[in-house]
Length: 222
Image (tube, rainbow, N blue to C red; front, top):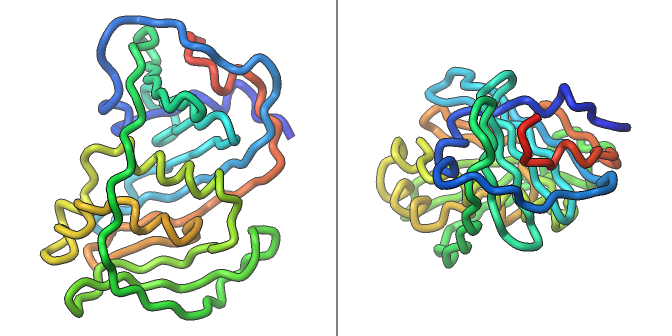
């Protein structure tokens, strides 16, 4: 299956963190890339905020925040370089993908999940992260997901410099998640991820074995 050019015109608030600097023409793939598409419904304060679409291969990552927005990110995963592309702006100078912070000690409760996972990588688990006896957030995850897909979600999280989860969660949860923002993604690929403040990611689309044309990961104006 090929994702056509019309798929890749998306963007939004997440882009703001990487735009800035001088125009550049970075490398991009020259052949089709086989990978995975994940699309999440993003909820904040109990209301739908938009869609987060991820196009993932072992070497490349594209992040579209919303549909019909103003831009997107392309990540050269091998070089750990991030490029911001705006609908009206030229490509902006890249920046390095931030390094992962050290993990924080969480109390993690596990139980089997009844979520349907046929074709999605095995049995799902229901996880609950706690700090000082307080429930911080929960997720239904696929712990046996392909490692380069799971690590792509962690890269997306590193790109988000301001996320309401830390801002809205009370101590000790907010403080712990600020120090360890990758905690929700270390255990697997989330099918659902939520907290008591009405925030969450909910998987809406998951496709494997997609052949992405090179234009999908191009950062030249299209």
